[in-house]
Picture 1 (cartoon, rainbow, N blue to C red):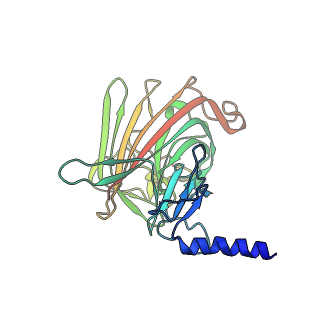
Picture 2 (spheres, rainbow, N blue to C red):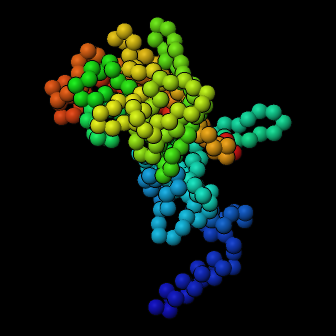
Picture 3 (cartoon, rainbow, N blue to C red):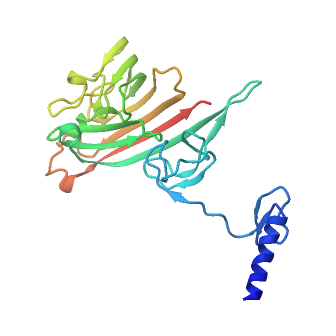
Length: 290
Protein backbone atom coordinates (compact mmCIF):
# COMPACT_ATOMS: atom_id res chain seq x y z
CA UNK A 1 0.00 0.00 0.00
CA UNK A 2 2.83 2.40 0.79
CA UNK A 3 4.38 1.69 -2.61
CA UNK A 4 1.09 2.43 -4.40
CA UNK A 5 0.63 5.68 -2.50
CA UNK A 6 4.20 6.66 -3.28
CA UNK A 7 3.82 5.94 -7.02
CA UNK A 8 0.49 7.80 -7.23
CA UNK A 9 1.97 10.73 -5.39
CA UNK A 10 4.97 10.74 -7.69
CA UNK A 11 2.76 10.81 -10.82
CA UNK A 12 0.61 13.62 -9.44
CA UNK A 13 3.69 15.56 -8.47
CA UNK A 14 5.06 15.11 -11.99
CA UNK A 15 1.85 16.45 -13.53
CA UNK A 16 1.75 19.48 -11.24
CA UNK A 17 5.50 20.10 -11.51
CA UNK A 18 5.43 20.16 -15.31
CA UNK A 19 2.73 21.91 -17.33
CA UNK A 20 2.69 19.13 -19.93
CA UNK A 21 1.17 15.64 -19.90
CA UNK A 22 2.60 12.97 -22.20
CA UNK A 23 1.04 9.71 -23.41
CA UNK A 24 3.57 7.19 -24.77
CA UNK A 25 6.33 9.73 -24.25
CA UNK A 26 8.49 10.70 -21.28
CA UNK A 27 9.28 14.13 -22.71
CA UNK A 28 6.12 15.92 -23.82
CA UNK A 29 6.61 18.98 -25.98
CA UNK A 30 6.96 22.13 -23.90
CA UNK A 31 4.40 23.97 -26.05
CA UNK A 32 1.66 21.36 -25.52
CA UNK A 33 -0.56 20.75 -22.50
CA UNK A 34 -1.10 17.20 -23.82
CA UNK A 35 1.35 15.35 -26.09
CA UNK A 36 0.16 12.01 -27.51
CA UNK A 37 2.90 10.05 -29.24
CA UNK A 38 2.16 7.25 -31.74
CA UNK A 39 3.29 6.18 -35.19
CA UNK A 40 0.37 3.90 -36.03
CA UNK A 41 -2.69 5.06 -34.06
CA UNK A 42 -4.89 8.14 -33.92
CA UNK A 43 -7.07 9.88 -31.35
CA UNK A 44 -10.75 8.89 -31.49
CA UNK A 45 -13.07 11.71 -30.44
CA UNK A 46 -16.56 11.42 -28.95
CA UNK A 47 -19.04 10.23 -31.60
CA UNK A 48 -22.44 11.94 -31.53
CA UNK A 49 -25.34 12.15 -34.01
CA UNK A 50 -26.22 15.85 -34.40
CA UNK A 51 -29.83 16.55 -35.31
CA UNK A 52 -29.35 20.30 -35.82
CA UNK A 53 -26.58 22.89 -35.99
CA UNK A 54 -27.65 24.28 -32.58
CA UNK A 55 -28.12 20.97 -30.74
CA UNK A 56 -27.12 20.90 -27.05
CA UNK A 57 -25.48 17.50 -26.52
CA UNK A 58 -25.77 17.26 -22.72
CA UNK A 59 -27.51 18.70 -19.69
CA UNK A 60 -24.87 21.42 -19.35
CA UNK A 61 -24.58 24.12 -22.07
CA UNK A 62 -22.05 23.39 -24.83
CA UNK A 63 -18.71 25.04 -24.07
CA UNK A 64 -17.10 27.14 -26.80
CA UNK A 65 -14.39 25.04 -28.43
CA UNK A 66 -16.10 21.71 -27.68
CA UNK A 67 -15.03 19.09 -30.25
CA UNK A 68 -17.00 16.04 -31.43
CA UNK A 69 -17.28 13.70 -34.41
CA UNK A 70 -20.79 13.86 -35.89
CA UNK A 71 -21.89 10.46 -37.20
CA UNK A 72 -24.89 11.74 -39.22
CA UNK A 73 -27.27 11.14 -40.89
CA UNK A 74 -29.19 14.43 -40.42
CA UNK A 75 -26.09 16.62 -40.73
CA UNK A 76 -23.07 15.69 -42.85
CA UNK A 77 -20.63 13.47 -40.87
CA UNK A 78 -17.30 14.97 -39.82
CA UNK A 79 -15.48 16.72 -36.99
CA UNK A 80 -17.41 19.69 -35.58
CA UNK A 81 -16.62 22.34 -32.99
CA UNK A 82 -19.00 24.53 -30.99
CA UNK A 83 -18.27 28.20 -31.71
CA UNK A 84 -20.46 29.49 -28.89
CA UNK A 85 -23.73 29.51 -30.82
CA UNK A 86 -23.64 26.65 -33.36
CA UNK A 87 -21.71 23.59 -34.54
CA UNK A 88 -19.22 24.29 -37.35
CA UNK A 89 -17.60 21.63 -39.50
CA UNK A 90 -13.84 21.40 -39.98
CA UNK A 91 -13.55 19.54 -43.24
CA UNK A 92 -14.43 21.87 -46.14
CA UNK A 93 -13.65 25.53 -46.62
CA UNK A 94 -12.64 27.87 -49.41
CA UNK A 95 -10.93 31.23 -49.37
CA UNK A 96 -11.72 34.49 -51.12
CA UNK A 97 -9.25 36.37 -53.30
CA UNK A 98 -7.77 39.86 -53.16
CA UNK A 99 -5.71 41.69 -50.60
CA UNK A 100 -7.81 40.35 -47.74
CA UNK A 101 -9.00 36.78 -47.35
CA UNK A 102 -12.10 35.49 -45.65
CA UNK A 103 -13.10 31.87 -45.19
CA UNK A 104 -16.45 30.46 -46.20
CA UNK A 105 -17.76 27.30 -44.59
CA UNK A 106 -19.00 24.90 -47.29
CA UNK A 107 -20.96 21.75 -46.47
CA UNK A 108 -22.31 19.31 -49.03
CA UNK A 109 -24.91 16.58 -48.67
CA UNK A 110 -26.32 14.07 -51.17
CA UNK A 111 -29.29 11.68 -51.25
CA UNK A 112 -30.06 9.03 -53.87
CA UNK A 113 -32.69 6.32 -54.05
CA UNK A 114 -36.21 5.29 -55.13
CA UNK A 115 -39.42 7.08 -54.24
CA UNK A 116 -40.99 5.70 -51.05
CA UNK A 117 -44.46 5.99 -49.52
CA UNK A 118 -45.29 9.10 -47.48
CA UNK A 119 -48.33 10.91 -46.08
CA UNK A 120 -46.75 14.23 -45.00
CA UNK A 121 -49.22 17.13 -44.73
CA UNK A 122 -52.13 14.73 -45.17
CA UNK A 123 -51.48 13.81 -48.83
CA UNK A 124 -50.58 10.17 -49.50
CA UNK A 125 -48.02 9.56 -52.21
CA UNK A 126 -44.38 8.72 -52.92
CA UNK A 127 -41.32 10.90 -52.38
CA UNK A 128 -37.59 11.23 -51.79
CA UNK A 129 -36.33 14.17 -49.72
CA UNK A 130 -33.11 15.89 -48.68
CA UNK A 131 -32.43 18.30 -45.78
CA UNK A 132 -29.83 21.08 -45.77
CA UNK A 133 -26.85 20.44 -43.45
CA UNK A 134 -28.07 23.11 -41.00
CA UNK A 135 -31.54 21.52 -40.88
CA UNK A 136 -33.37 24.72 -41.89
CA UNK A 137 -34.84 23.54 -45.20
CA UNK A 138 -35.89 20.27 -46.83
CA UNK A 139 -36.63 19.64 -50.51
CA UNK A 140 -38.48 16.65 -51.90
CA UNK A 141 -39.66 15.16 -55.19
CA UNK A 142 -43.25 13.98 -54.80
CA UNK A 143 -46.19 12.38 -56.62
CA UNK A 144 -49.63 11.79 -55.10
CA UNK A 145 -50.90 8.20 -55.11
CA UNK A 146 -52.06 7.03 -58.57
CA UNK A 147 -50.06 9.76 -60.33
CA UNK A 148 -47.54 8.81 -63.03
CA UNK A 149 -43.85 8.76 -62.09
CA UNK A 150 -43.16 11.30 -64.86
CA UNK A 151 -45.37 13.83 -63.06
CA UNK A 152 -43.17 14.27 -59.99
CA UNK A 153 -42.98 17.79 -58.55
CA UNK A 154 -40.30 19.46 -56.46
CA UNK A 155 -41.43 21.03 -53.16
CA UNK A 156 -39.59 22.93 -50.41
CA UNK A 157 -40.23 22.90 -46.64
CA UNK A 158 -39.24 25.46 -44.02
CA UNK A 159 -38.09 23.52 -40.92
CA UNK A 160 -37.62 26.55 -38.65
CA UNK A 161 -40.08 27.78 -36.03
CA UNK A 162 -41.21 30.89 -37.93
CA UNK A 163 -42.38 31.90 -41.40
CA UNK A 164 -39.38 32.46 -43.70
CA UNK A 165 -39.09 34.47 -46.92
CA UNK A 166 -36.48 33.45 -49.49
CA UNK A 167 -34.84 34.84 -52.62
CA UNK A 168 -34.96 32.01 -55.15
CA UNK A 169 -33.75 31.22 -58.67
CA UNK A 170 -33.93 28.00 -60.67
CA UNK A 171 -33.23 26.49 -64.06
CA UNK A 172 -34.52 23.33 -65.69
CA UNK A 173 -32.72 21.70 -68.60
CA UNK A 174 -33.89 19.12 -71.14
CA UNK A 175 -33.57 19.44 -74.96
CA UNK A 176 -34.08 23.15 -74.21
CA UNK A 177 -33.94 25.29 -71.09
CA UNK A 178 -36.20 27.36 -68.87
CA UNK A 179 -36.09 29.17 -65.57
CA UNK A 180 -37.85 31.12 -62.85
CA UNK A 181 -36.90 33.69 -60.21
CA UNK A 182 -38.39 35.45 -57.17
CA UNK A 183 -37.45 38.27 -54.86
CA UNK A 184 -39.75 37.11 -52.08
CA UNK A 185 -41.24 33.62 -51.65
CA UNK A 186 -42.95 33.27 -48.25
CA UNK A 187 -42.72 29.74 -46.81
CA UNK A 188 -44.94 28.37 -44.02
CA UNK A 189 -43.63 26.50 -40.99
CA UNK A 190 -43.25 22.73 -41.35
CA UNK A 191 -45.28 22.29 -44.55
CA UNK A 192 -44.30 21.32 -48.08
CA UNK A 193 -44.87 24.25 -50.43
CA UNK A 194 -44.02 25.79 -53.80
CA UNK A 195 -44.47 28.83 -56.00
CA UNK A 196 -46.52 27.02 -58.68
CA UNK A 197 -44.27 28.30 -61.49
CA UNK A 198 -44.71 31.97 -60.58
CA UNK A 199 -41.84 34.36 -61.27
CA UNK A 200 -42.34 37.70 -59.56
CA UNK A 201 -40.50 40.76 -58.30
CA UNK A 202 -43.05 41.07 -55.49
CA UNK A 203 -44.27 38.75 -52.73
CA UNK A 204 -45.42 35.21 -53.51
CA UNK A 205 -47.26 33.84 -50.48
CA UNK A 206 -47.03 30.03 -50.18
CA UNK A 207 -48.60 29.88 -46.71
CA UNK A 208 -52.18 29.51 -48.00
CA UNK A 209 -54.09 28.19 -50.99
CA UNK A 210 -52.75 25.93 -53.72
CA UNK A 211 -49.11 26.73 -52.93
CA UNK A 212 -49.14 24.82 -49.62
CA UNK A 213 -49.47 21.01 -49.44
CA UNK A 214 -52.79 19.73 -48.07
CA UNK A 215 -54.80 16.56 -48.58
CA UNK A 216 -56.14 17.96 -51.86
CA UNK A 217 -53.32 20.14 -53.29
CA UNK A 218 -50.02 19.34 -55.00
CA UNK A 219 -47.81 22.46 -55.11
CA UNK A 220 -44.56 22.64 -57.09
CA UNK A 221 -41.38 24.70 -56.77
CA UNK A 222 -40.39 26.02 -60.18
CA UNK A 223 -41.80 24.33 -63.25
CA UNK A 224 -44.28 21.45 -62.68
CA UNK A 225 -43.26 17.86 -63.44
CA UNK A 226 -39.52 17.23 -63.59
CA UNK A 227 -39.92 15.23 -66.81
CA UNK A 228 -40.02 16.59 -70.38
CA UNK A 229 -41.36 14.39 -73.17
CA UNK A 230 -41.14 11.30 -70.98
CA UNK A 231 -37.45 11.89 -70.18
CA UNK A 232 -35.77 13.37 -67.07
CA UNK A 233 -34.86 17.03 -66.70
CA UNK A 234 -31.96 18.48 -64.75
CA UNK A 235 -32.92 21.02 -62.08
CA UNK A 236 -30.52 23.64 -60.67
CA UNK A 237 -31.82 25.77 -57.78
CA UNK A 238 -30.29 28.50 -55.60
CA UNK A 239 -31.79 30.31 -52.63
CA UNK A 240 -31.15 32.27 -49.45
CA UNK A 241 -33.38 34.04 -46.95
CA UNK A 242 -34.37 37.71 -47.23
CA UNK A 243 -32.75 38.38 -43.85
CA UNK A 244 -29.77 40.66 -44.49
CA UNK A 245 -27.95 39.29 -41.44
CA UNK A 246 -28.22 35.68 -42.65
CA UNK A 247 -25.00 34.69 -44.44
CA UNK A 248 -26.03 31.22 -45.60
CA UNK A 249 -26.65 30.39 -49.28
CA UNK A 250 -27.86 27.11 -50.78
CA UNK A 251 -27.28 25.49 -54.20
CA UNK A 252 -29.13 22.33 -55.25
CA UNK A 253 -28.81 19.91 -58.15
CA UNK A 254 -31.58 17.37 -58.81
CA UNK A 255 -32.61 14.74 -61.34
CA UNK A 256 -35.00 11.76 -61.33
CA UNK A 257 -35.42 8.93 -63.79
CA UNK A 258 -37.66 5.89 -64.18
CA UNK A 259 -37.60 2.85 -66.44
CA UNK A 260 -41.43 3.01 -66.34
CA UNK A 261 -42.25 6.75 -66.41
CA UNK A 262 -45.83 6.11 -67.55
CA UNK A 263 -46.63 3.91 -64.55
CA UNK A 264 -48.53 5.30 -61.58
CA UNK A 265 -47.33 5.35 -58.00
CA UNK A 266 -49.51 2.83 -56.19
CA UNK A 267 -49.33 -0.41 -54.21
CA UNK A 268 -49.00 -2.46 -57.41
CA UNK A 269 -46.03 -0.56 -58.85
CA UNK A 270 -44.53 0.29 -55.45
CA UNK A 271 -44.75 -2.96 -53.42
CA UNK A 272 -44.08 -2.51 -49.69
CA UNK A 273 -44.08 1.26 -50.30
CA UNK A 274 -40.97 1.39 -52.52
CA UNK A 275 -41.09 2.37 -56.21
CA UNK A 276 -38.14 0.30 -57.40
CA UNK A 277 -38.33 1.45 -61.04
CA UNK A 278 -37.60 5.05 -59.96
CA UNK A 279 -34.36 6.69 -58.85
CA UNK A 280 -33.93 10.29 -57.72
CA UNK A 281 -30.72 12.16 -56.92
CA UNK A 282 -30.17 15.34 -54.89
CA UNK A 283 -27.08 17.28 -53.88
CA UNK A 284 -27.09 20.48 -51.80
CA UNK A 285 -24.13 22.77 -51.19
CA UNK A 286 -24.58 25.00 -48.15
CA UNK A 287 -22.22 28.00 -48.18
CA UNK A 288 -21.86 30.20 -45.11
CA UNK A 289 -19.89 33.43 -45.40
CA UNK A 290 -17.97 34.72 -42.34
